[in-house]
Amino acid sequence: MDTTSSTGWWVCTGCGVEAELPVAATAGCEVPCPDCAEPMTESWRWESVAA
Image (cartoon, rainbow, N blue to C red; front, side):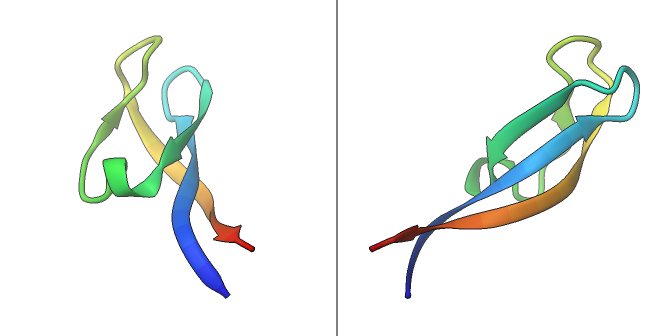
């Protein structure tokens, strides 16, 4: 299995907006909500696989 990238599903703690973001871009960072600027939390992640 060749894993090429991971994606995370993020949810805003303030307004509840959801976003799909690349894990490499968000690792170790606090992610602000694009709508209300409250912090977002990662709910779950998955990996893309190249065939």
